[in-house]
Amino acid sequence: MAIKVQLDVLLAERGMSVGDFAEAIGLSPANVAVLKNGRAKAVRFTTLDAICRVLGCSPGDVMVWVPDEELS
Image 1: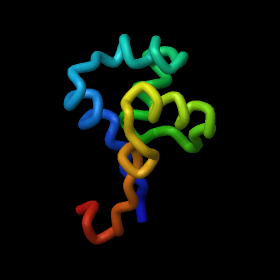
Image 2: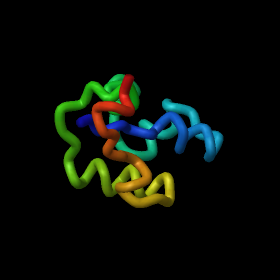
Image 3: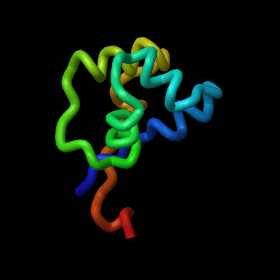
Image 4: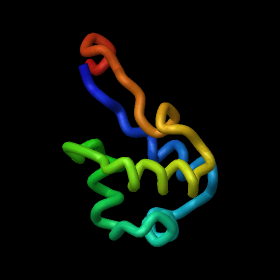
């Protein structure tokens, strides 16, 4: 099982750069890259709230569960 982070898709749909997004949610671009690339081990609820506010979405739009057999 894996959790897939869809920030790339959401940012592209909104025409938002990583730098602008990082500034809007109060994270460094490096930390946004960690989230975007799925390398984060945890996400604070305050960060998730900021992501959803800025992107106008819900947590289920940001992260989705993908069964192991679909990862190949």
